Each structure stands twice: as structure tokens, then as C-alpha cells.
Length: 599
Image (cartoon, rainbow, N blue to C red):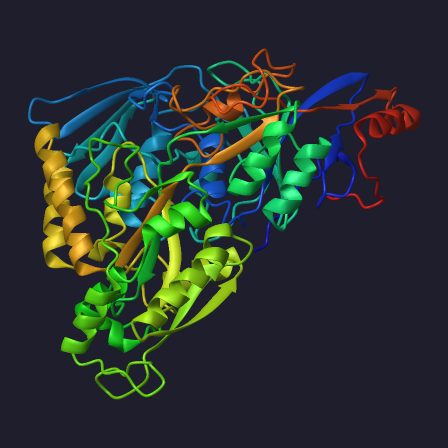
């Protein structure tokens, strides 16, 4: 990944970036810089907002680009964002959005209706631009901007998702010059959100600067840094030392151990993410030709169903997630109760063995079954290295499948290698998962024929490579159904089809486990307000609400809200850095020093 760095204002980094990057921006006079440092372990797949699909990548697009609408932090209902109001025609085929006046891009250019018109039109006409969010423009007829404040979207039939268009709006004057929508944009990014991405170095940091002209009002901090760690253990140690201020995705033992720290506040909430085991069903590309190298035996739905019966979600909840999770059932997480289908995943290895016996998979003398061509049933299990579920869960899955006569070889690799392999279908079994939206359309679209990529594994975002006529027909129905009750029933039927086809097994829904320095930061806004999370929201509210100062709430509780971030102070007098002051700050904050400046 080639990313051009920005050199207009060179920050001085104090402390090893792998441990804790401490930035001291040089200013014309003595000035205090307030920086929130959030720890992350997940690799960034792309800065390109048309391509990125990871949690960290999605966080960045929501911070850097305003969307037409966003989700309210209290209860997820759609609220105005770049569009301040909207109306629809009686036949629900024409939507007219009024674009907010006075909003500017970070390079000073005004935001107009031409920007969303360009963005959506490009997604409709360029398959690469539709990679991450192309489902939102399916069935659209046209997008126009009759004037600077009016956006008109015409659809071929009614659409249930028009106030849930979870796609970033990009500046036309920048992106109209782009010829390859798979390529990475130069830095700094040009955006209009509460924070603007300034710099990035893979495996080390992502730096954002507060947008002082943000239409909702400038953030209370100056900078937001995402700091990379190899694993969660190192991340937790950095939090305890004050080298970072905020983190998520703790493992249960770490979370429980922090309950005794008076400076740290804990937060957890109902997970909106489903974790799954993908089973390659005989993947095909968009041209219906085979893609990848999945074991051909897995084309048999009976084999896939037997594998599903051999997976014990309750054990994963109890042993891997320490009880901070809910057992697997429907594809839509129970945090979105309206759309969730309560389809409990049965754990029945005896039934799995019987199914395999009856469908032509005999056991050999070593206990391993053979497929219908007489080859031993040996499957690769792809997972993310340094990830709790994948590392611990792979041991359980290997044992469970051995009990039904299937040999499994775990292969734990980097996040990027998992992303590449699951997009190119070069796997048999794979750990995966998605954060669902309040509107379920996006995650539902991942299982459609249209989600399959080109032969090169690019141009779309697949999940299990299911391509099923019944599922696709139901998907089209729910998308066109504007009666909410009827749509909910269709979505629940779709989840039953997914369970029957067994191209994936829902492993469970883990509760995000978060922690932050309550001795340095005031309360964060969680989403939703009751039992919600700070990081990886359906919006930017958590980061945007960061307020320096000791939390007024007691530390070591698990309620939502409250947080802190350390202050990073850099002083200059007449353009000269006062080294003694910097050393004093470093000593007080107990940072580790380094001569290596990471730009």
C-alpha cells in the first residue's frame, strides 16, 4: 500500500510509536495541543472510502466524511447530517434532499449537492467505486443536482434504505480527477467530517486533525491518533501506563483485571457484530465461473450442515468470551431486536455424524472421513493471528470437527491476508464477522449473487460466496418493501434461508469490551445511550465528544459513558523547541524516548 505522506507541518514524535506515539506540534507561540490516543490492533485495509470495509477503515470514513444522514447516538434513528431535510414523492420513487448550507471541505471549497451527486453516480457506474457500499445504489435510476443545495435521487422502484445510505460523500473537485477507484488517495485527505486524516504509516499510526470548521462545531480536542499494537496484551499495558487513552476489544480476563484500577473506567454494551465461521460453498465470481481454491466437497449442503451441527456456540460464549457474549442464532445480531431471527444453532455431533454416514462420507481407519471421490476430508481453517476468538476458537473447532471425522488445519495469518483470501475465495473454512447497521440491508447484501467479485477478487465485497435464487428474491423484496412490519418478516425469512444453506455458521455476538483513562477525560457519548459503545459506532459521536478533564463518573464501573484522553503538550518559543520543557513532560508522563521520528 503506497500512501504519500504530508510534510506541510512536521510533528515531532516523542516515544516509540509502537508503544506510544506522543506528538508535539510546533506552533508560532506557546500552545497546548489536546490529543486523544486510541489503541488499535486491526490492520487498515485501505484509506480509499470506496474500498475500505474493516472496522478501523469504516471509523476513518465516518470521521473524515459527512454522510447524507447519520444515526442518532441515543437510539439509532436516522437524523440529518449533510442533508438537513428531505422529502419523497407520493410514489416513493423520487427523493429530494436539501444540502446543508455553509459546509466546507477541509481545503476550503464549499460542499454542494454536486458532491453527493458525483459520489452516488460514480458508485452506480464504476464497479470499483461500488466495492464497499454498492448495495445502496442498486435499483437507482439517476442522481442529479439541479442546484447547489438540491439533490434528487430517482429509483426504479421504492427503496426502504433511503434514510440509511451508509456511504461517505466525497468532494467532486478531488475525486473527479481520479481514474482508478481502487487506488489509495494522497494525504492529507480532503474531508468535511469532525476529523481529517493527515498521515498514516502501516502498523504504526493514523493521525487525524480536528476540523475546526466542522458544521456541528469544532471538536474539543486538536488531534486524534490511532496507535497500532501487535496484540491486545501490549495495548492494555500501554493503557495502564497512560501511553494511550482509549481502547476496545479487550479479552475478558484483561477486562476483569482492570476493574481494580482507579484510573481506568470500563465500558461494555450489547454487541452489534456477528461472528461467523465461513464455509466455502463452491465460490463463483460475478461471471459465474469458479473462483478460489475451496475444497470441492463443501459444495454439498449436507456436509456444510453437518459442520454447522458440530459447532458449539455456548462453549465459545463461556470459554472464549468469558460470558461477555450471546449465543449464535440469527444472522442479524440481537442488538437490533426487531430484525433478529431467533434461530438457535443446535449443537448435535451425533446428528452430524449420522448425516455424514447417510450421505456418503465413510470414516477411515484413522477416524477421518473420505469425500465422495475417496479423498480424506481435510479442511483449512483461516483465521486472524493475535485475535482471541480465532486463536482460542480454532482449537475448539478443530476438536469438534475431528469428533465427526473431519481433519482441520488452522492457518492464522495477518488481517490483510485474511481479507485477501476471503475476497478471493482461497479458503475452506474461515473466521469472519461484520458489524451490522441499524438498517440490515448492508449485511444482507453481502450474501447475494451481486456481492461476488470479479475473477481477480476485486470490485465487490462478498462474505460466504452464497449465490442462491431464493435468498436473492427475498433480498429484492425486502429492499422494495416500505411497510416496516412486512419487511421485518421478509428479513427473518432470509435468515432462515441462510441457516438452511449453511454457507456460514453464526458463532455468537460478543459484547465490545472497552476501557479508557477516566483520570484525564470527561464522559464520552456512547451509542446507543443505554448500553452503548464508544468506538466503532454507527457514526462519530464517541470520538467527537472527547473532552479533556477528569471524568465526573466513578472509575471501574461498566456503565456506558465517561472517558478520558491524555493531554500531549508541545511548547515552542519564537519557533524554537524548548527541550527542557519537553523532557519534563516526558518524565511526568513516563513515556519511553526515541530518536526515531515517525512521519
